[in-house]
Image 1: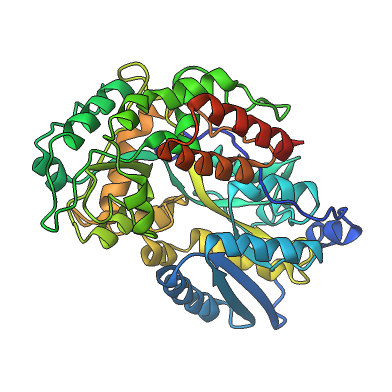
Image 2: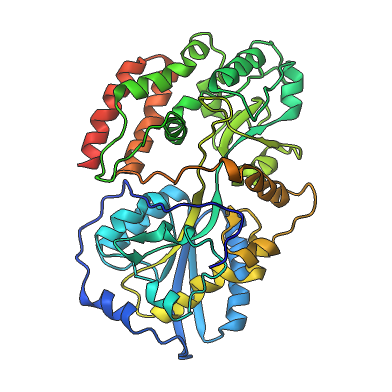
Length: 440
């Protein structure tokens, strides 16, 4: 296989979704054992994804091209917001009526696989129906569980520190050297920017950042920088309550001095936030969020910097597939499903249509087809991933069962911590109590 600039390593994921256990029947084996890639018999398949109207418009444009190449395959579509999407999939899985093709997330992959809900795509890779020659060979293992290829990554992302230069300038704070700065250095910047007393034209205070400890994935990144494996192979945690408390205490002084973005103001802005209304100077997130940040903030010069680290320069970053494509094991048209998956994954024009809106395309030809006009959003995201490739030294952690539940619990406890109704010790104790239930 070709080896582009990414240095991916094997990864997998799990979920918070509870499904009615359905044993994998003989139909699963029949669907994947004898593919017939040359069949042109008219068929209708369904395809669903999560996202907004912009993503829907892009998919419809791509499917129009697919229909021109495969006029005998009719594709019926639907989409929903992320939470509703998984509620719908759960209901379908209970009745073994999953869509023929669907967008999939790492956090939900293992649970569906355990219940035999997803089609093994390996035979379609082997017979050429799905062409992975333009993928990094280790990236393709992202959707391999129990020796079955049940999902194929469409694109990649990694963490970046987003900066709003105008807000930074307004506060008078100076952002540290992003190649060497630590979490403590970042906290100093937040304190300086938030404490400057600067405001917007409407009188809203400007801040350095939100409290980043309220996001579970950032805790995972911090653990990797500490040399801690977040999740063990046997599905247990590689960290304890002391690790949680230590991470939360990174911003204890900022919370106490009210130098992080106020949670009350943040909740009032939903679905936007302090960064996207130009009231916060920085925000850490996945790099492919750049397009959304630019669109929501109306600020074209949003910048991407490296993330902070425990030890200067020791980033220990990881690439994460932003999403995958999977097929329901119950599909009656696995060959057509494989053709659609292959088209969406590898057709260069699809790369042009989506750009980096779903992350940087995993396929080499799709990536090359993305517009790289200097200064464009797509060009900047690709440029950032190229720049940090050597800093990507970790594989994506394999989460425990119930990942979605424990991630949501971390978020809700983070809000309580922000309000000051619990201590960091309370947070750790309550979170582990919930985690034990979710992973049992």
